[in-house]
Length: 195
Image (cartoon, rainbow, N blue to C red; front, side, top):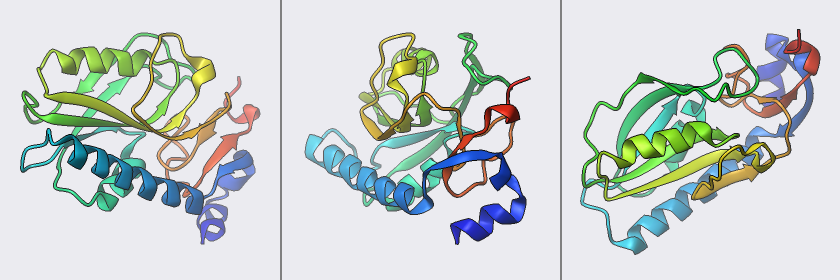
């Protein structure tokens, strides 16, 4: 199934290799959803509405959709959009808020869902901003982690996969808004993004 979806688009020629198959991703997302649910239930800090699970748009949308479907606890959902990349392959270091949360998080248990932790700048900024709104707790689940790229100290509470410093696309991750719909995560050939 994976092969049909992405070969049909012709995008397979832009990938150097497949880093994570759709099956590997789905298996790990299920594990994370169960782990997160167990942690929140054991903590006892949730109210009857469960955690507010916040998707960082646009990159985390695939991971987010699968993660919340697999979470066997009550949740509320919300979305936020921030950017530090634009159409570049590395963080600019300047973070801009493009869409704020719709709901209030004061006194709520909050889980931020991110596609990838790279420099740590974007998530550090977001956590400072959201902490000022006085949530009961604030945690981060990230599908991918590139620890070698850190520019500020940052550690997500839940990590799907730690990866090497490769430019990856698929399953929500993009280059210049392309490749998000690939059902796997692949390493993009340098000639596709280098001038």
